[in-house]
Image (tube, rainbow, N blue to C red; front, side, top):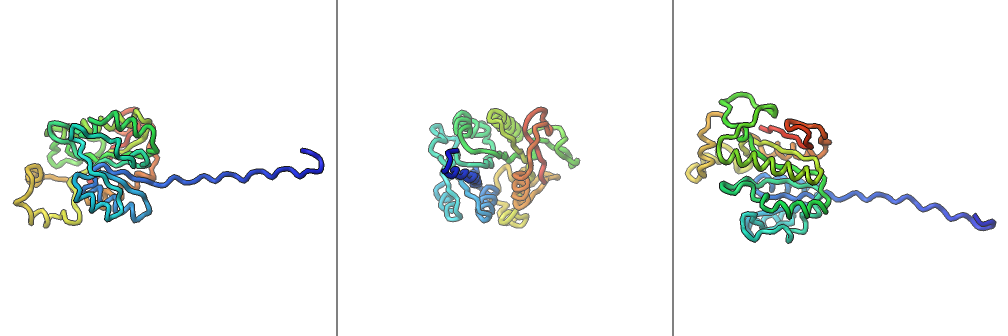
Length: 250
């Protein structure tokens, strides 16, 4: 300090600016759209993908920054979806395709490159209780042995492992929700009866089962919210030494 000169005041502490919460939804269909709409109401930024220009317009009317994207196309690329790299949260709600599997796994290198340089802190893959096979009405929880029988169930389980490999590469904690049959607005038992003549083969097979787990879309949303505030442990839950949690929600 120089005599006669007042010391320079200390610089005020720099306040940390909270990072805006940004959800990206791969597959903004029935569940993805419901989650998106409710997160927007909570002040989130929401981006996502859909499969047609008409659905894109519907999502944009809600406030979602939507992109038409078909991962099954040979020239598919994630490079044009700029909002993916800005996302802090990633929800995957695209089912596997027979003969292909999880279509996003064909773009694994793109995903790794984009997400490695992004802001991602949470990932959730929506899977299915079909990975347990036909349990004859027995009680099933996360400790039940996986035993997929149908092609779609086997593809679901392979998709889970694919996302597990990705989060390990990114050093992220993640959640996999194994969901029962989903119902909600426009998808009640009465709605199913009303359109029974137009059900797909998979839907008809599901309806013919004696035992079927069910879950309301609002409960899926609440589970998603709860998982965001839950610190995912580094010790295993079902799968040893992997930063992943599996949940059966039905």
